[in-house]
Length: 280
Length: 294
Image 1 (cartoon, each protein chain N blue to C red):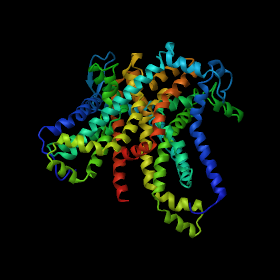
Image 2: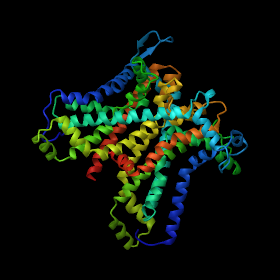
Image 3: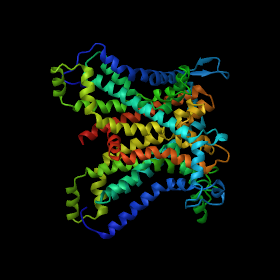
Image 4: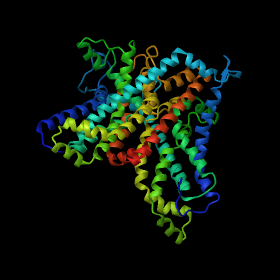
């Protein structure tokens, strides 16, 4: 800071505290609402202090869900979300590492052509090609399965580019030394490239996990069997009812938001690194 | 494009390494996109039994169709509103955090976590606090004499989805603005203050111009976000209503294809959206090249 102005500091703190409050407000309301009974919520206006039905609501949502709205227990949906997010993350990272390795450390025919094929995925978000993609997955009998939930989403141009850029910064001498010592390509990849990429992998892991966990449209259209519902889309089933049970909806929202928020809070440094690098 | 100076010889291995990525891309990206392109030139009869080649008729119909033109303008309002709101709040917070010394990292932590919340959940959260019968905000608005009802009023519904979309994006913009602010040389700001420039003047004549690359980058990213990643917000809350007031393009593709089963029209809309994404991606890449030189 250039000059010391006590008043300006006070104003700055006020601005920031109101910013934090604004950002936290919707989530605070959700937490409060999840601790009241439905009648408590429907009595006029929303209470602003926690009520006494928290444990009851969370247990009910966790164990039995809202069956008449077609929402299975949250425990099941959270587990499905976790599997889907992990499969997407691990899948994206592994196929991107392999393709970046091929593109950087080999010269072969059609290299540019493959590079462009991968590049094109950047331009085709699932939302814009949703119906033909659905048809493909239906033709492959992948509806209502974890394979269908994850495999169509694991191609990743951003991760491939990021690893490519990172590999390009690794000194040439690494490969020369490895080849002098007689290491083949796969050994070089496993024993030298992978250990060097750990931080990058971890940073991308955080971003990709959040991406996978927060998927909405894709699980929504390819799962009709409640056993495969993920939590983020399952909540929509509960809110689209005539009279939603808001206390349970909000308990589910809190449980759905908690895992990725915790990931960000505990891995903030990796998260920021991953975020700023994937967008380059 | 470069490789390493020294590379491994390989006849089959590089293809094997690329295979998983390329196969997934071909099956789930290129093929469906091709299908969309193909279907956009066809029209199916009412029973879906026969389809005839109609050329660009589907596209021509779209632009004659009032609801598509409406969706275009709704998308424009939504994207501009979300981008402006989210970026200005984020810039205010980032430049304020940037002058803090001891509390900087605490405030940063407190401001970044909404990035983790799924757009669908953001929609549900705002839907709930703006709920006309039990929500807290309509209650407060009523005290100042405004009847909030996003179920009937198109502009209320639009405001609601803009709030939800912008709220979720604040943390992202905040982080990039903060990084941009920290890369501005402190000496410039000190020199200006020795010359007697007030903090406001310094912001508008030095800091803001130097942030232009970041601002431009974020504008593109936010428009892409508002156009494509906000499907969940619309679907989980207004479902395009009331009276199509929040029917943005990505939602309309889904609604016309899955609900309305009008495949030709939906495919034509997909193709238009792809053209928009390609254009935006190009702008983004052109800009990144410039930023490297900057």
